[in-house]
Length: 81
Image (cartoon, rainbow, N blue to C red; front, side, top):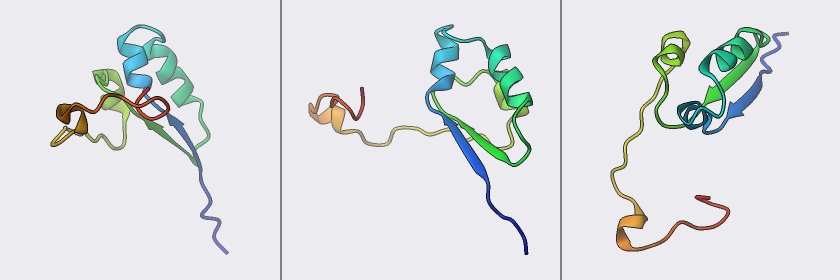
């Protein structure tokens, strides 16, 4: 029987934290290098540094098509901030 279970860690907005120098890109790369092989790690956020793009298995770039903010709806506590 195959064991297809995986662990996943999501580092939400880590790229923006790197951009604002709250954490170093080399620190993130070091942690990624120590993760178990069966662990999936998802990094999110704008301004992904090239160093992360270079080592990533998958890179997706999203762009805004339509946003309710443009209709005057402000950011909502607990959702956008």
